Length: 164
Image (tube, rainbow, N blue to C red; front, side, top):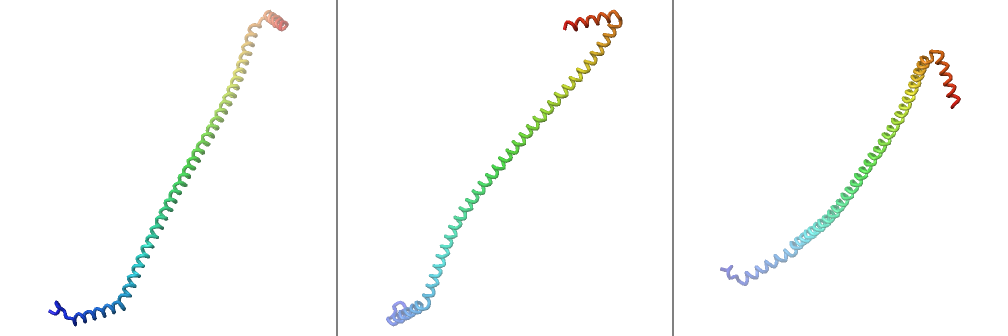
């Protein structure tokens, strides 16, 4: 029953023991515990600060990476556009050269055809002239086989020469 109704002596000794315990705890235990809690708090705060700093650096890196990616895409697009323009230019140059070559070949063919035509016409004229001379020679031989006809032909020829 003493525990339910404690006596003054028990309360005194309990208070004294509790005070000594508080003194010992306050002198030897609480300073290292508080120091370690403070260190832990500082460590957590430093870690949070470093994490925030790392998060900001990540944002900056992401922004820089996005910027670099956009620049790379822009450069890629420029290179592709330049390549297309170069391709189109080369195709156009090749087309122009092919047209010039075709026109030159056509002109050479026309000239060759013209020269061949003129040569054929000249050859045909020569053959016609040769045939005409042969025919005239044969006609004259048949017409002028008689001496009276020869004199008549000579007379007509002389008359035509005087008239011209």
